[in-house]
Image (cartoon, rainbow, N blue to C red; front, side, top):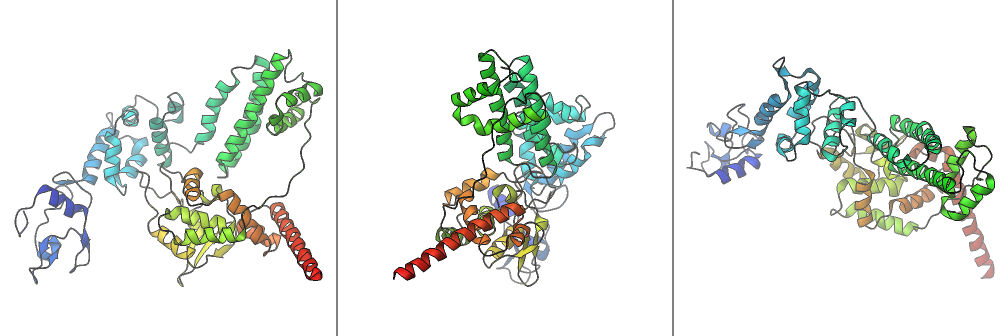
Length: 471
């Protein structure tokens, strides 16, 4: 009941879920009470000297209304306590306390409640068994379970909360895939390809993951190399031999049968020699090629203009696309950027550190970045801020590359082609060593792009001089 009369459930809920700034105390609260000084003006319950009908019966807070008389945070606390309590101690299971703290302080407790009751609640049942001591709280528990969406999400939630140590999900998924992929091979070849996959490719992937540099393209390349090695082993078996016994003529015959296999086989054949498994065969490495630029500078600036001004494109995609178009940053690097790489200055400038040097952002982009920092979104039910500039839907993880790319392609921006155009433009203006340090590329890459820019520029000057002489 309000001083002005009764209020229905729907109106009460609508006011509670849409608080406003009180004109007298300037706090964000439900506004539904006549002011003491002006009966025609509506204010919050405190300024009206009334007891709030929007307050939770448990904690007295008005935010996060849920149900008739209680808030979502109180209900969530009750349900999490029931779920995660160790029956032997009567308290939250000691190992699950970080998860409890993470979820109970979520910015949207309603989302956690929905997750707890969303069917099928496989993850919730698993948490219950862990809290009761019926399942170990470890990665081994998940390795013995199906790698489905529900189990994977809970595992990442436990990892993000610090209950479980960090792990590399793509690599672990690849290990499961590897066992099935090697199955068609004979024992000798399966062992050989397995050594190549586990001790060479997977080790390199783990090193990249530990440095925070693991990309999907690296995963796909490793899978392609393994598939190529398996295909070679199957071909060898059909011809009555093994990979270790292959001769150079037999390898050439295989490459003739599979002309597209050269690239995926080069790494494996080179490894065979280094591992002394078969030093009789070789595939010569092709020389490096100069990069290509197929997007004109005019097209690049048209795309920049679109991303700067088109508010129908997701804000994070606009920022990421501009990082590519202006500073030649690859999407796999952009998605893994952290908030501490951004430095807003008091004079409205915004500095972004892509490698070691902070770069001042141009007008327009600086405003987009400031907007993003004020509302980066909370796609995960977890509370903790893990420092990602572009947080992802899974706890503790950043957005995936494909999410960015989809938005940009829909806006007419091809990130790979546009990055080449940006690199070409930058290489023509900035010395190679400085370029490498500014945008975080290898020195030899910067030199290659500088050579391309200088070559095309010199050709342009020559053509221009010839044209003048002809005129």
